[in-house]
Length: 313
Length: 275
Image (cartoon, rainbow over all chains, first blue to last red; front, side, top):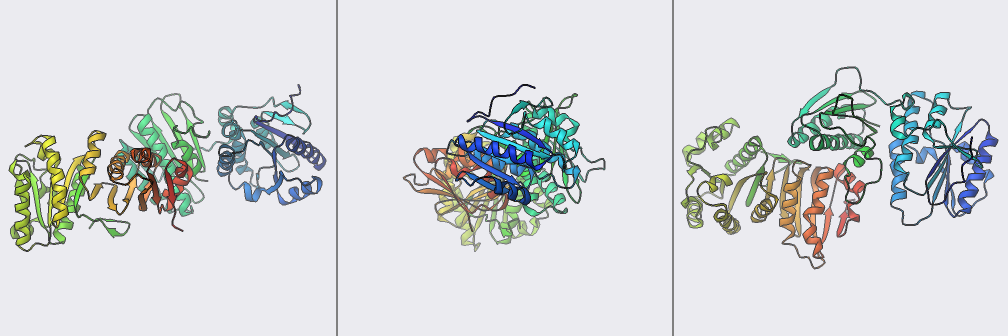
């Protein structure tokens, strides 16, 4: 495996550190934090309470070094992703941000895929900024499938001192198509709501139907409003860029709601549209929708048209 | 009575009903007629001589269960056939003054722009519209003019400007307030160009010497990205001249969207959130 050059200041990097003991973690963290501080960057160390305490004892205090807890900073994948993006895109100083830590995969292995997708999409959403991530994965705590996903979502593997390209790395669009990404499918049951939209004048009744249906679930009022707004933006895209009629189907389950929007247009040229920070006068509909919904997946089926799946957080 | 946000819709003054579809026109017109009859107003309506039955006011009101027969019998409701004379300001003033002299507290008047255009040119009608705005300022008169939303943008702006009391659309209501415009209802990709026209027209009368044109959003329930763009494009002429725009009291999803889009970072904008 060829070693890569050290991390370049002013550019983006997203490295993976896989460790099976605390010493490897501490050694990698010391090296990464030292590089960040020596290059003049801001450094953030984030993880669980226990892990942050261990690293705080090891690292010397520094005015540009701060510590944070995943339970405060990493509440949900998409809100975390866009919070980082906003911080970087709207920052007025040119200082690089160096972040080392874990993502809160939690006990439920079924839920790991959402954070694995976050790891992949970091490359799309933050790739334009002077951001350096070193994500630490503990093999003692995480299943092999989650470690495999990490190898597919980080362009480089690192020990802190040495970096090399990850042979298993997949671009975000390819990762989302891989089973490791665990992209949800629409439920098999009959949808609670279906509707066909023939024009923009049908947006308002569609919103009313969706709002009524999701308000009956456990979703809080602000999240329900956000989901309705996200579906509205996707419907507008379908009606404006696709070809009417646009069909929607909505499934409401106690824990989450899923909405599928299908049109017969030419398809969406960039299925990752809306992850990058928009240009000043550029389209913002999907970028807003992605921040207001738990997840949005865009697919261009081989038989034509576009299929967009929205899932509440 | 049609209500928005739990409060009745104000149907007074010189209003424009902008509609995308015939269904929207019928719903808006029925709400206006019901409200006017409830208020005890004299209700006057102009139709073309050959109006098809499914578009005629009386059939439309019967379909919406508005009690037209009593109103016709008592003379509270009158339907006129369109003629050039029926659009002359003198004739209109005379009809209004007679109704007021007969004891009606107010007069409510409506007709479609296409009805006027069947007996006169659009430019002559536009002059009459400006005179009608004056009639509504000097007498207790409400005039609801019906226009299709498919008009060119520039025409729509003029139409909004000549209807000083605001726009009525299936989702959106605008109302002039001191220093600006109040919005109620929803703005999305289907009606953003109507909002844009209403804003251009309203902001044109606002001082641009550093003063702010305010857009009261406290009754706006939904806004999408296309609608938010209308705030920017609809106030561009005002801001280019140095004017400022204050978005007041956004609530719920409207506040969330404005926050995400950071409209306050756009030149000339400020957002005033109610605590």
